[in-house]
Image (cartoon, rainbow, N blue to C red):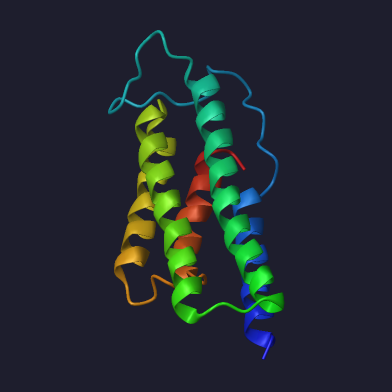
Length: 154
């Protein structure tokens, strides 16, 4: 009966691969980005540097939570836990991820990065409200994860 945990781990590895994407592309220069009229940052904010910082931090905490879920699934192969306990761990990881996303989004000076973080947070929140909140597999989060990678230049 180890095929389900192995399948879950493989799914998590694929999801982490989506999150990791390519290494961040270096921005050509601050002048090549098209200015947005809707969300003009404060003149004292270096948008490129802020985006790199927010994106790097976001990538780190998204990976941290997905890796923790994978670690829990791997540990359950050797030492099975009840479905209730496994579900509580998964819910805890998604809840912590949601909190991290909600904390990071307002710090993004770039509107695209902020929107991508907010969209991913909304997806995680929707996942937590669904009947599948205790399941690791969340293919509905793949599009917002890809959008975050795109907004971060990955």
